[in-house]
Image (cartoon, rainbow, N blue to C red; front, top):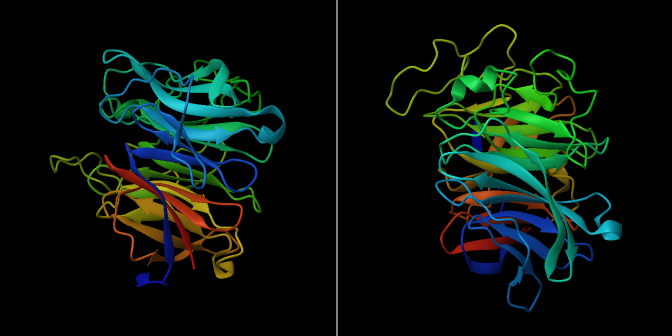
Length: 348
């Protein structure tokens, strides 16, 4: 059941941005970094015009491709390292990549591409690209299935349609579930994903949450476990955009069901676990943005990790939501996916 929710105060932090994709909060509590899909990294500071950060890797900007997530190293205050996920390559051969760099004033230095999804593909869509840190200090990232290559989401020799787990230097970890499996990619943490656009770790429980787009229906929220198979394209509640059946199965033995399934699609994008002081009743709940539904939802999660309800929140905001973040002070920040996109800060 979808129930309405609370009033809110919305502050517009920036506007006129070309499809802002992701937000990272810099130490100090006032400045933020924002990625634009076109390939720019901006610094936003109160009372100042957005500052473009130089040195960003060249991106493949076509279709859904471009610059995606920005993630600070856990020890950023000391080492100034950050990570960017992005589409690299060409129309004929593109892939999701991770670059590591050090922020030095207004530019990135020591830029190094530390991870590339293989194989490459010739479609400019379904890149994934969301990143997060697990409690053990490992880095996880979502990868899309490339749209025309959906069968590869089930193939462990392919990096498409996966969540990968690597070191801060980009190397697979020996504890990954298929690290010793013949022919499998050692970086794989979970598989059977379509186009995951949300990834978040609960800092209290350590749970890793993900959401992904279905085709025509079948969007999902998943609780990710080591080695889990999340079904795509064998098990899905969605249909092909033509209306054709993709699979006769909505569930399949050995494959993990979504904790939430949306039919029709809301096109979820951006995911955060709320652990802030401004809405204490939301502790441990998920905040989800939606592109197609143009809204923000709260997913009510109980102590055991079960989803027990959901509600629309922030009803005054009607826009394609691309990213959702919880600031250190508990405010919820959003980006809107528009040619003249906005960065918004929401408080009670």
